[in-house]
Image 1 (cartoon, rainbow, N blue to C red):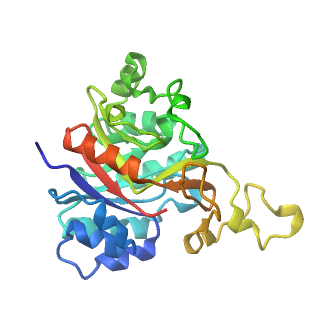
Image 2 (cartoon, rainbow, N blue to C red):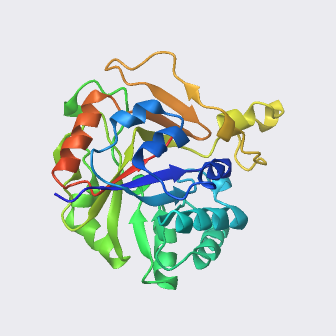
Length: 287
C-alpha cells in the first residue's frame, strides 16, 4: 500500500520562521513546529512530508500578503515540498486578490478552494492549476454535541453523489478535503474518482463573519459587527471550552471559527481509512 502524503499547514506568517533554517522536514518535525507533542501519536509509520499549506480557509483577513506568500514559496522550494495556498470564501474584491496571488505561484503549486466562485475563476484563468475542494464545500454535519451516530446518517458528505462529482470535475477538481465528524467510520473517506485529504487533529464545526476576540476592544456599538479593521488578534488567542461534550469531545474557538479535537474513535477511523488507501494525504495543522 502506498504511504500517504503528509502536509504541514500554517496560517500565521510568523510560523514560517521555524522553516527558515531547515534543509529538510521530517514528519516528527511537524509536532515541534505546531507545538503539539501529541501529534506524534497521529503520524503514520510510513510516509514523508510532501506539502506545505499556507493561508487561512476561514477568514479573508488572513489571506497571505504577497511578501509572506513569497516566503512560503521559497521555504517550500528549499525543503522540496509542494506549496498549497489555502483560500476562504470570498467576495468580488477578495476573488481578485486570490487571482493575483495565484499568478505568483510556481506551476506545481496547488490551491485549496472553499468557494465555488473562486474555483470557477481560478479554473478559467489557469485550467492546468491543481485545485483542491476544501472542507467548507463538503457540507458535513460535525456538531460535537451530537449524542449518537444516528444523527449522522441523514447528512453524509455530498462528494459521493454523481451530480456533485460532475460539478467538481467541470472545475478540474480531482482532490477533495474532508474533516472527521463525530462517530466517523472509515467508509466515509472512500470517494470514488477523487483523492482525499483529511485534516489532523482538529476539525472545524462552523465559521461566521464575526470575530469574537477582535471585537473585545471595540466600542460597544461596533462590537461583533463585520467590516471592522482587523489586527489579526486571533493569531494570539485560542479559547477552549471549559466543559467537554456529552461524548467527551473538547471544543475550541479562534477568531470567527469553532473547532474540536479528534477523539480516539475519530483517530482510529483515520488510521483505518489511511491504511486502506482511501485517505491519500494527511494535513497536520493547529487550530
